Every structure is written in C-alpha cells, then in structure tokens.
Image 1: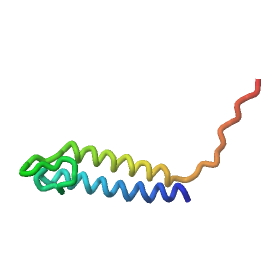
Image 2 (image 1 turned 45 degrees about the vertical axis):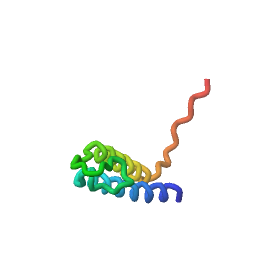
Image 3 (image 1 turned 45 degrees about the horizontal axis):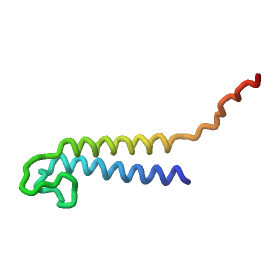
Image 4 (image 1 turned 60 degrees about the horizontal axis):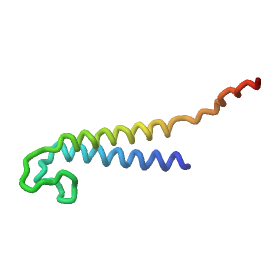
Length: 83
C-alpha cells in the first residue's frame, strides 16, 4: 500500500513538473504568473533553464514511479559464510 501511494504521487508530480517545463519554454518572463520564480515585468526573455530543471525533476519522478511499481523480488541474498 505504501508503494502505491508513492507511485501515484510521483506520477502526479511528474506530470505537473512536465507541464511547468512546457509553460516556462513557451511563456515570456513578463507573462508568467507573478508568484512564479523568474517573473520579470515587461521582459520578453524565456526561462530555458527553469524549464530544463523542471523536466529533469519530472523525469526523475517518473523513474521513481517506474522502479517503485515493478514486481517485488522474493530472492534473498545468500547468507555470509561463518568462519
């Protein structure tokens, strides 16, 4: 149950960060929402680095969801030999 919650939240956040990355890439700094990092009134600059950071976070969260949703391994590591 705990892994399912992590997977769901990871996917939700990955989609949000991917959307945020696209928003940063297509919206000039002067048109960003005023509470967002990078907002500069009257600026036509597009924040490429903010978008790159957001897409990296999205990919990391997607990878986390992928690995947490995989099958459980029942294989036990071999016991250390007693000397």
